[in-house]
Structures are given as structure tokens and as C-alpha cells.
Image (cartoon, rainbow, N blue to C red; front, top):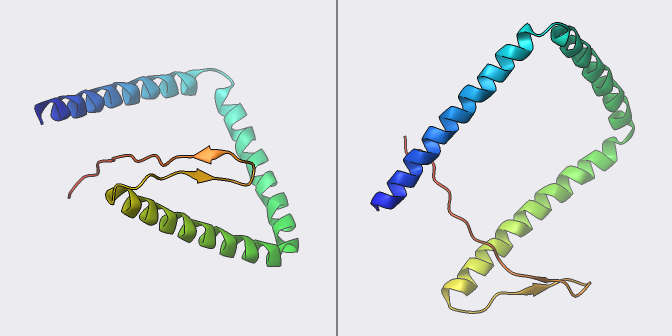
Length: 117
């Protein structure tokens, strides 16, 4: 268990160092001549892009509703597929899927950590 904690601490140290480097780069960019003007111009262009997208999305209102419904269905099916694969794996069964193009898939499991409090 000590190795796990050492690796965790190493990850935290490296993450902090990455944050410090990004901060230094950001500070340097903000003091670079012309950067602020370009950044402001980008904000204006993004706003214009967003307004154009809104006009187009208004024309596809029904399709956007269907898109949201399909996304929810796909997410639900993926969760169900994960649950079934985990159950089969715990029973010791082999898990492999093949699509309509004869491409085989195998499950990939991962472990993530989150703060308790």
C-alpha cells in the first residue's frame, strides 16, 4: 500500500509543477505586446460565431430535440453494457464483441480515485 501512496504523492507533486509552469507561461503571455489585443479579437469572433450557430440551431429545433434524446439513449445503453460486461467478467466468462464490419472489441476497465470529503 505504501507504493500506491508514493505514486499518488508523486502525481500530486508533478501536477503542482505543471500548474506552476502553466501559470508562468500565462503571465508571460499577458505581458507580451499584442497578445491582449489578439485575445480580445478572438472573444469578439467567438461571440459572432456563437450568434451564427444560434440562428442555425433555431432552424434545427426538432432535430436538436431528437439529438438530445438519442444521446441519452446511447449513454443509458453504454452504462447497461458496462454493467453486463462487469457481471460476465465477475462470473469468469470471456467478453468480446464484434461489430457489423467484423471488428472485434474487448472491454477496458480502469480505476480512478476521488476525494472522500
